[in-house]
Length: 237
Image (cartoon, rainbow, N blue to C red):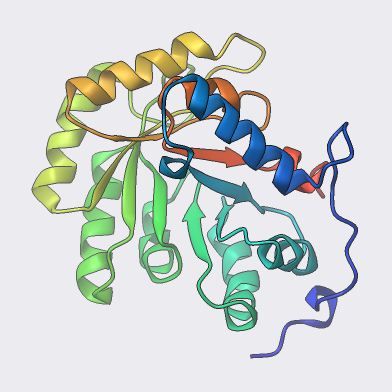
């Protein structure tokens, strides 16, 4: 499949950190350093490059440097970009990192390799049916509203046990928990709380940490970090 003209591979200036290092190299080095401080193996942590709103040439430039996992938060945007991107660069792994409407479950299951926003029983049911129809089983993370913020998605902390039971009963591939701490606050206590909830329920996967706090997340057990601005620069739109 041919890439759209606006998304063809063009010379792309790599983002760099304050020390002049390529952005991807810098983020990987910081993840590795944080992991070592915590006595962890850096290879246990999956870096997800959040590519929402980014053009195809920027995504391909990062993939050419060896980045394999990317994240999108809108099914429609991903459908427009990713079939051609995967034709151009096979083997890339795609994560859905936003809130997912139940009526988009079939599209999400067809396109994504992991879904990080499972937060209610109706979505569990929709995903289970979509997986059965498609014969495809993306990893699923339960999203927890770790800061109890009414404007955010995610299940309430008190509802985690019941939602976990629904996910397990439906046979979804349960990868772990995901959360986004409240903005403009110290993230560490929220990461620590999510890690405790995961331990209490026998879950190993922790999708937590973004551009401003991924090193803290790694030190507190993150297995997946979702990094956008630190890799791509300021968001386009």
